[in-house]
Length: 119
Image (cartoon, rainbow, N blue to C red):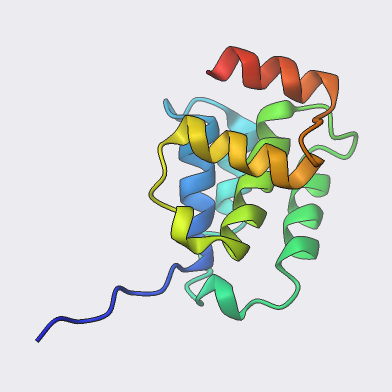
């Protein structure tokens, strides 16, 4: 008898976001972001204030919001909270979808430049 897929947990979504923005795992800020969600095994669909939690995590790590990879990690995690069906999308597509959703298709210049280099 087939079973339903397991729901996407908050940590799994955070890990997917970190992998999308930092596939080699060398960015310390993104690693710190991931650590903030490491014990979050609840389904992300059940977290009512996920946008606020993500914004607080990003703000605590980079108060000025200058780091585009960290900004995009937050954007991807937030995006996956609402579009869990995209969690298996390739990283480039996931980054573009999250940027479109987070910035209404017009990301800040530093994020746009980073996205152009990430492609």
